[in-house]
Length: 227
Image 1 (tube, rainbow, N blue to C red):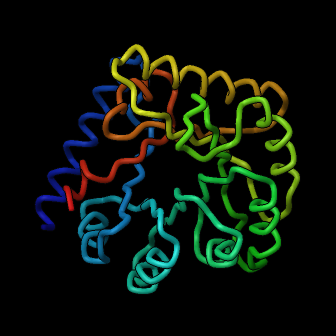
Image 2: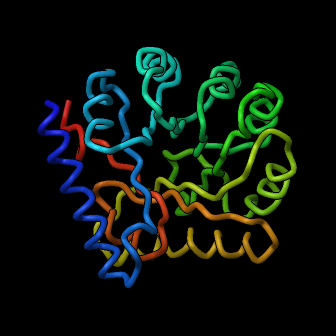
């Protein structure tokens, strides 16, 4: 498994570099987040041995157990799944990043429960940029007020936006949705928020997301394979 994960990671980096070149961007302007949900600690160890340090998890309890098994490695953990109020303490105590803030109550609880001995929790607001009925996320009209409120909370550092758009049939449709997210991102920056992270793009829409300004792509199956 170790060699396959290493090969897959090398291919992913090649794909990211190619997408960046096509978009006229530097390859190092896009960070790779390896989505390790449902994969055990041994898979994460293999990815780390191949040079990967940032990992994304959707299921909080599973992630915390995985972190305990991997505490000997210098890993960066990103929460990319929905957060219920009864799980904010676990997230605040164990994760480095949260991509999925979609309401002020969750951000406030994360701020209150972040241990003062830890660095500020790096956070993104999840935006339902295309109005998909099955996706969580704040609506674009509500975004500016929420962003300003989250940016003012202690123990959190607002870094940017995250999107999970509905599947699109064509690359043009993918680009259009990602362009909306980029416009929202730039609008918040113009309002004075020092944002630097646009978390968008997965296996199916990697190149369109990078073309429209993604700074972080989230890939799982392409690295670890299928369950």
